[in-house]
Structure formats: C-alpha cells, structure tokens
Image 1 (tube, rainbow, N blue to C red):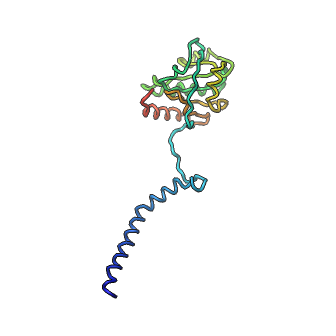
Image 2 (cartoon, one colour):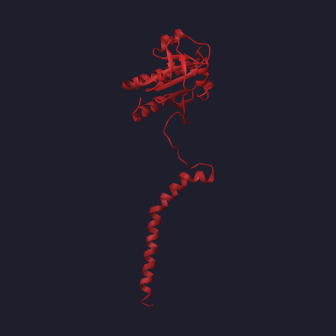
Amino acid sequence: MNDSQIPDTATRRSRRMAWILVGAFFGPLLLAFLLYYGGSFVGDGAWRPAGNTNRGDLIHPARPLPAFELVTTTGEKLDARTLDGKWNVIFVGDGQCDARCREALVLMRQTRLALNDDMTRVQRLFLVTDHCCDQTYLDAEHAGLITATLDSPDGQSLLAVFPDTDQGRIYIVDPLGNLMMSYSREAPQKGLLEDLKKLLKLSHIG
C-alpha cells in the first residue's frame, strides 16, 4: 500500500465515524419530528400527541361576546361590564331547570367553592332561553347566581355566540369577555375545577 493512501483511508474512516455520531445524535430528533408532524404530511395525524391538557373543549378561536344589555331576575342590569374583570362560568338553558340544568348549576356552585381564596375571581351566570324561572329553587340552592333571560334582541344576539346550547353545556368566558371553553355533560366532574385552577394560576387579569 502506498504511504500516501494511509492518510486518505484514515480520513475516510474518521469522516465515517463522524457521520455515525451525527446520525446517533440527530436521528432520534428527526424521528420525533416526523412522528409529531408526520400526520400533517400523510393526512391521518395518528402519531401526533395531544397538544393540551385541558379537560373541557377549547373554543378556537375564542369568541368575543357582543355588546348586550339584559335585566336579571332581581331587576338589575346585566351587560358586558358585569363580566369584565372576572372569570365567568355560564349555563344556558330553559328556566324550568331540568335534571341536567340542576346538575350543571350544582357543579358550578361546588367548583367555585372549591377554589377557596380564588372563588371571588369567579362568578356564575344562568342565561335563560325560555320559561323563566324556578326562582324558589334558585334562591334556595344557588345564592349569588346571576340569572337573566335571553328573550330580547340583545339576548338573542348573545345566545348566537354560544355553540351547542341544546346539549346542556357549561361555558367559560374570560375576564376580557371572550367565550373560550365549554364542557359537555360527559366531561369529567372535576375537569371544570382543574381547568379553572390552571387558568386562575396563569392569569394576570381577573
């Protein structure tokens, strides 16, 4: 073997080893990238992991509430300013309040109480679509609940922002008046509390 070939062989061996090391280092990163984003390329998205940990259904993009002015069942004015600066947990439904309605209102009440010192940052609303209202039940079981009817043009405009109101959902509106999350009746009972704790911890408003 020509002595001049020895450096070339050594150089090739060194380069080969360098590429092996590069592959060993970057290979897993490339694989992770392909597994995460591969669904975008092949169309099934089967490999992409869940991108969030919230228990409710995120409303994306968030829906700003329109300007509105309603009257509560106690005769007070309810408008967008009533919601400003607080996290608002809202149920939309018939004022006769069937089993799902009562279940949702109890969950909203107990969730707020479970927030302890942070409970003052959250208020509860019951927006009534019709047959208002079983006031005896509401007064006895849900002190502090804000109840208002949607039987006005402003009410109907507000109602149109909420998706799937016929499914007994609970909604969250942020302190800036954006509808941003909802919970079906099948959602975990503790899901609302878990999500609110995270939102309150991360929020610098409300």
